[in-house]
Length: 304
Image 1 (cartoon, rainbow, N blue to C red):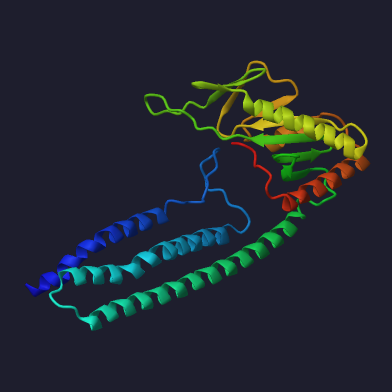
Image 2 (image 1 turned 135 degrees about the vertical axis):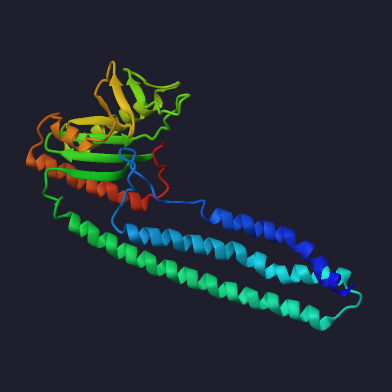
C-alpha cells in the first residue's frame, strides 16, 4: 500500500510534536503581574501597560526561538523516515524536504529579528515613560521635601531594600515575603509573634530576618556618621506584608510591621530632630551611594 510509505514516517515526528506541545505550554508559565498582599488588587507601576507588552513580547520571542528548530527539523526528520520506508529513492523529493527546511529556517530567522526589534522599541518607550514618570514624581516628592525614599541602596556586600529619610530620623526598611499556611478547613493563618530575638510563625520560627535588619541598621548608622561627620538617628523596620503582627517583646531598636500603614507609622516615629543642613547632607550622600548600584551590578540582592 503506497500510502503507508507517507503515513508511517509520521511516527518519527511524534517526539518533535511532544516537544512543541511542552514549549507552547511553558509559554504562559511566566506571569510577571503581581497582586497586593493587602487587598489582592493588581499592582501597577509607571509604564505598566508597556511592561505587560514587554512580557508578551518576550513570550513571543521564547516561542519563536524554541519552536524554530523544532519546525525546521520536521521536514528533514520526515524525509529520513520516508527514506526508510520508500521502495525507491526519489532525489527530487529529498531536495524538496531540504528546501522546505531552509525556507522555514529563513522564516524563523525573520521572526526572531522582528521580535528583537519589537522588544527594542518597547524598551525605548518604557524608558521614556519611566523617565517622564520620575520627573512627574517631583511634583509630590521634590528633592527639597523633608521626606525622601531610596530603593536598593548598596552596602559593601548586598543591597538594602529601602532607606527612608524623614525630618525626625532615618529608617532602614526590609521586606520579607512568607507564605501563609492553611488550616484543615482551608483558612489562612496569618498571625506572627514577634519576640526579642526571633519571629514565631505558625509552624516555624526565624532569626535571620531580624539579624539582617540589625546588621543593615548598624552599617547605615556607622556609614552615615562617617560621611556626615556627626551622629544620625537610624532605626530598622521589618515589613511582613499580609501578616498580623503580635508583639510580645519587640526587638531593641527595631520595628516589625505588616506594612499596610507603613507611611503613616514612619511619619509618626520621632527618633530625633535632623537639622536642615544635616538632612540635606544625608540625602545628598545617599543619592551618591545609590548611584553606585549601576557601577557594581554584581551586588547580591537581599534574601527573601
